[in-house]
Length: 249
Picture 1 (cartoon, one colour):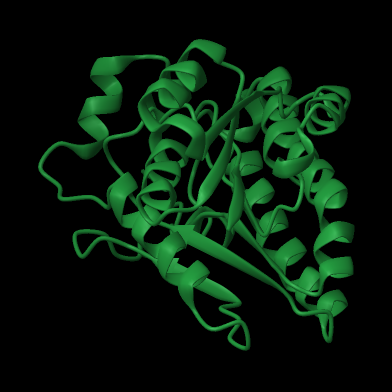
Picture 2 (cartoon, rainbow, N blue to C red):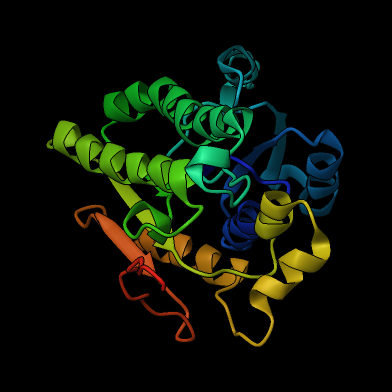
């Protein structure tokens, strides 16, 4: 069994790669930080192939995939994990450059690599695409603006893949986690390690291991079962009330 996991250098991606390798899968791990991928290769040995690519650059994706050895080309599981959030400013004060970066990574990169690998899965009559979305794709919150929009795109893209893939034997799933700790997500978003730590203080959030276990569960199901959408939250997280702006005075 052969999987490709994007964003495998840390967080969810590294945990997913670890779980799959532990289950005797061969894993292609991608990311921009070559040194981290190399370290994973040294740890996992021949079950792990490091593949440096930048999800924001379609030519980087295509050239990296073209470099794969023949025995690493028939990918049966694609985990579109690479993604990020940047900033929590309201839309009217947000950075346009940050918006573009989120769109290019969370949407453009995801569809580029999916478009490259999907025909082979269809030709072989089997395969699974697991996209890592977010509850932010369903439930808006202040400062979520473009990040939430990109994850809504991921969810709808996954559903439309299902519509197109009927009868092909290829499956597609969107996993939408809520509050998850122990990753670089909030550090990258806030650019401040102390502020990132405060996001999880006093909580028991989901972990990267929880997401990896969920990916493995879906990948291990019989091929006639498709999980369309799986939403996960820690029990410490719930739903906010609708905001109401009130005049004062």
